[in-house]
Length: 467
Image 1: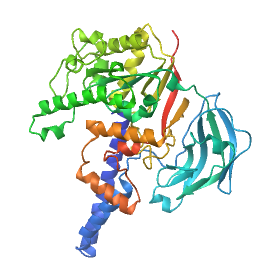
Image 2: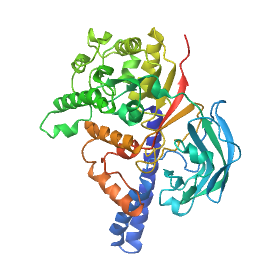
Image 3: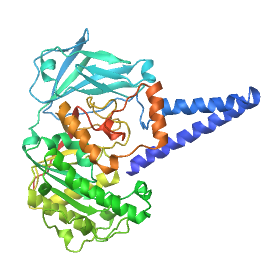
Image 4: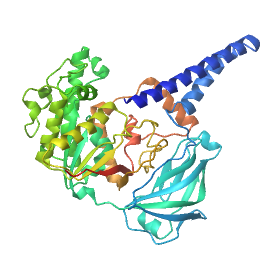
């Protein structure tokens, strides 16, 4: 977790503690001056209300505008909404990624039920109580947009009568040579299963074993270290085997075997080895036995930053990718994700091969833990940029229902996404289902089955500087 995300969480928890203290004072007053038996009833009611409507981690005002400044090559054209139909003022420009900028405002009910926009046969949800500029993803609906037959309707929100449509044109990166960097097993599937399952040539490189937080395996009677080793072995297997479900052979999958949450400290001391926090292992070669090619880190097995960068440089030279898919260095706050992208850029400076394009993904956000908001199978509206504008090109792919189902099954194979959520989370979901109208998919209980199995996959595009 990044420092900024930690600060946001700290402020969020401080505000919650303050609200709790004020609530306790009020409850004591009610117990003294009204009736003592009201106190437990009010405590239960307050807890239910919190779980239903106030438990989301939203670290910005929902009334903030989103700020996107698309590159000059993006075509922007004014549009209007007339009788619930999106009307173009000029012929639709050429491009596959369609993003509709609208001013939206939730109704009173939209403070308690998730507001959304129905765009043709798609639905995209937004923050409760929101107001301001938002971006609806119309990728995959080009034909109905072009002939002005796309129907727009607000659910628990009002749509302004005018907006702007951005048309962004990109090459079909599925036809180029791809390399996907996954800090942990499952990151490649979460961000880009639809992309890599349709790619002509793709390699997947997983940096860590993902062995920490193995309490579930301790229930088998294992001590902490043995449980972590078992989890690391299972997730190593996941990283090498599950891509085959999406058509990527094992000869194109590499597991580097570094240790979870150690990448940032490795970056600070490049020569120093950092073993696992939980498994007591210090030799990355235990996870590399099925790799399809030798790597520099195989020589001594030391979990150092220098070895990691050398491994990535060797993989660039071996696979010679045109496009690297990796975590967004500003959007995604996970510390291992940030370090993964940092390591790749250092590796490019040492490699004989320089890729052409970086496609960035965000499996986590600083500011909104529910993004993408809304239902599984629906579209992905753009995430919040409220402090500084996004200036990157964007590329959005469309996933058919068959590909979405395959993606859900791929996530179901991931050991870290299996099992029931904690009791508190299951109770929260049931309360939100009854009171807030939220729904979760049948494909899996982990939150990523809702967040990641969607109609769209979205990537931020930057070009690598040429040497």
